Image (cartoon, rainbow, N blue to C red):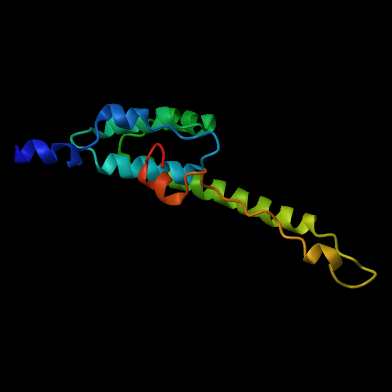
Length: 145
């Protein structure tokens, strides 16, 4: 009776099917997907590198990265995560450059007055790279709040 009472609260290891069901969201950054997928993978037991690599690749949205993984024939999970983090670094770099360029172009410099005038007081909307569930829910891989 005691075991039956607490059986539902036991955190069981993730299965290969759960790992395969982990998909990158359409607006989810590669880095967020890597973090969410890695947490799930680390909670799994007895999943071969080959199966894990296949599950990761299937969950990707970036076609170019999928193609590269197929061409390179990645054999180890360590190499996969090395490549994925390299791609995420590139994605972050492009996003940061875009944000800087957008921030500069949003503020028209007033050469006549020597300042940014009313544009300085205008605030940009806060941009988040997490979906509406927030960073903790995304990183933990929870489907909803």
